[in-house]
Length: 216
Image 1: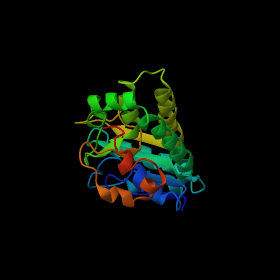
Image 2: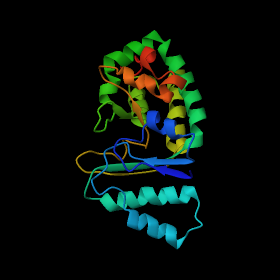
Image 3: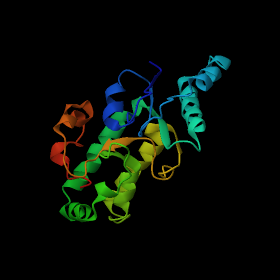
Image 4: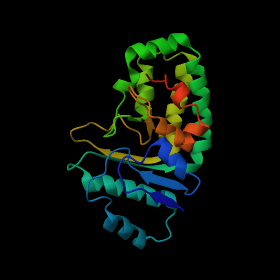
């Protein structure tokens, strides 16, 4: 598929998108819940019918921007389009970063005391956190010139500008702009669910139970 768009709540997370990454070029979805009206299909399909030769990247951007315009001033929303081909590099960089972190006792102690997971921007499902905001929270407690944060910032930037093709958010009761970048990650504050281990993302990365101290 050129585009796999999930008109369902809380789908744009690493664990879900990675499951789909072998079957679609671009994955469109929301880190947050989706209002009852769903996608503005009339606007999206009108744009496509007016330019049927547009490529998948441009269409995915139209889906994201049309969604934002549809709910601006009405609901709290966020929608993004992800480049599925970016996951191998993201996984590799994430694993390298987690390895740096989990063997650094000083950094891990600071993270535990600062309750990073609790302070990271969450969505309706509380254990779904925005990845970029997680890294921003890490930057408030670890030195910016440390190797961990240098690599962490590189990873964050790759997510926002490489993994994510387009991201739009509307602000209402919650402030999404500036706190979200379009990709959520499983980051429980207290109880780790063993069900997470059934995801391919848990199998292929170190972001799983035995490394769950990260962010906690």
